Image 1 (tube, rainbow, N blue to C red):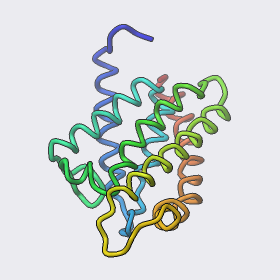
Image 2 (image 1 turned 120 degrees about the vertical axis):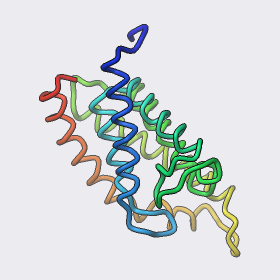
Image 3 (image 1 turned 180 degrees about the vertical axis):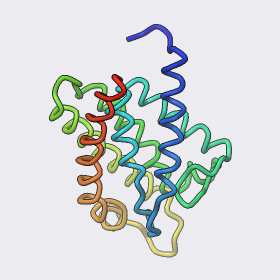
Amino acid sequence: MKKSLSVKDLCYIALSAALLAVCSWIAIPAAVPFTLQTFAVFAVLMMLGAWRGLAAIALYLLIGAVGLPVFSGFKGGIAALFGPTGGYLFGFLLTALTYRLLGRRERLWTEIVSLFAGLILCYAFGTVWFVRTYTGSADMTFLRALEICVFPFLLPDAVKLAVAALVSVRVRKAVRL
């Protein structure tokens, strides 16, 4: 690991945080919105690597926490970050850490498997968070939260992961990341 980040690294991190924001704005509204956010998380991690990707995700969460409308539905602020779906946002950090622990850039399949494992952790953390912070009129069970927050996203997120892998491999070659 490098001891310090170069200006080039900082630019990649900032651009990746912006990509995360733009992809979160592209959404189909639902209890938990369908966005391109997970695509951006996968692509950023595969293009930048675990540490710079983690920095980009952390920067994205930080600028959202201070109130910039970077989250789905053009939301921002502490309330959006710590609301019922905030666990999924924090889960992106778990995805990055899992990618760091399991992913090896020499083999595409290990990257994909590690990102999928990270996504499962993100789902688990986010679902537990959702159940604990849900303030709706009915009681929220873990199974009901899975039905709302995870099951509808399994296939779309698998497709996003595949597309992110294809895009990332080409970008890495073109930009020499």
